[in-house]
Length: 171
Ligand code: FES
View 1 (cartoon, rainbow, N blue to C red):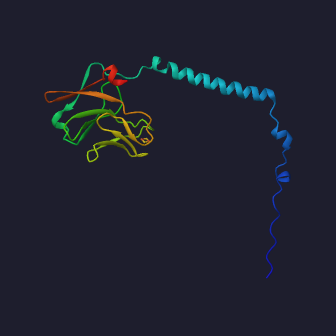
View 2: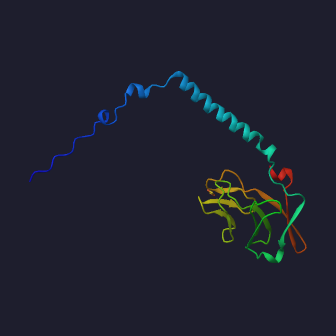
View 3: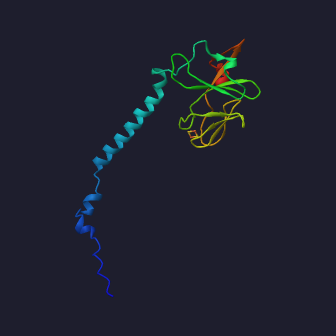
């Protein structure tokens, strides 16, 4: 039995009649324009990064902020919270030894919400398996480039407060 003949192969030169020499030609002026545009964009971007924090200073807690009562958080439990004047999500953790820690709840990799695992006593990020030390916020595993931003926890009687860590602790 005879096979039907195959259709002819496409001929790019016929189907897309672009003069190759013309298509590959980039004038010096066009190249210089492109370079100016790219380097100008990079200069503007770098400038913005340099002055952004001066124009929009990062949020800082003034004094102490009340989070909850000690009895609101069981041992091994967590309590999500925000601080007045900011929408940054934080998480208060009551570790298995009863101590409290407070961290920003956004992973430092791509900002997924992290959660505390009382079984591991570690903070996990479900997006790319990031793992943080629950005691310090330091990165233990995975792609996060920095520790979780931390707040200092102060327990006064039955009440739990947070405040900015002292300068030397923040560094
Ligand atoms: S967003 Fe957390 S590890 Fe990627």
